[in-house]
Amino acid sequence: MVKQSTVRYSDEELEEFKTLIESKIAEAKRGMEVYMDACNNSGNDTMETAPTFKGLEEGSQVLSKEENSRLASRLEKYINNLEAALVRIENKTYGVCRVTGQLIPKERLRSVPHATLSFDAKVNEKK
Image (cartoon, rainbow, N blue to C red):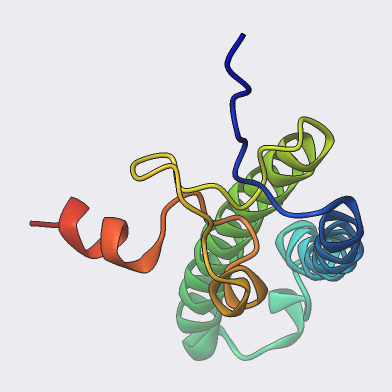
């Protein structure tokens, strides 16, 4: 019987990444609340402004809501990616490049904790 060596981070290292990811999720969720509140609240009542500026103000609010909605959507995707990283930690596959099978450097994972590709694999993917 041949023992298969598994390339992975230690349980202690995985726990360190788990703590980092959980703090990133909490931070992102707080940001998401801000964007959602901004989308749901119209801010100043346009009825109080002069008629000449009412159209401009409403247009500005629509753009602001669209931007907030776009940013909230982007944050939601980020949160989902972070939560998927937590699943990989539980499965003890976190930090393993899905292309090369090698460990993704800790520096990259600290910068992009949801990364599934090493830097070289990511660069080659775009070619």
